[in-house]
Image (cartoon, rainbow, N blue to C red; front, side):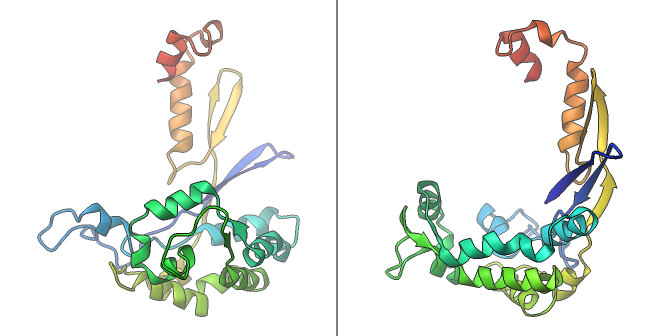
Length: 234
């Protein structure tokens, strides 16, 4: 996760980097087979092999500590209620469940997204997640440490390191995660100062570079969807 924060009083723009990191045991051969060739896509992207050390919650905790207004515990009330009461599976979610051929190979996912007869949940089915509600309660009362240390962290590591296609994450990886805070990447486009997330994101760099390329053209005189403006933007 990334977060861009604008402080109106000072005019400053800060960014918080909660991007996942590779486990310490990851090497350049992580996605290669024993003969040095790239693994098939299914072996690269499913299971624990491609799972990074999660950063979003640590980042959000840091941003809240520096700028939050509500109590940390209040931030989870709505999500806890939704997880306990459940929600109706949307047509889009139902289609995603039906079309994902890997879900049935992971027992926890199969138990959650398929019914008692082994059929994928249909649109309109009520999907509840009391385990998520319990996890959110732990985080609401214990902060991000509830996820990065202790029983929940142990469960994360166990799941990532389980078959099929286990990863290399350890409890030490979770304990050692640190979010980053940096000034935003900014540039001037015509009359405006444009700011956004810097590395490890490419968003602000790409956007500002594009705007700088466009700045020399008289875009206001061109119809928004005309051939010239569409060509320049592309």
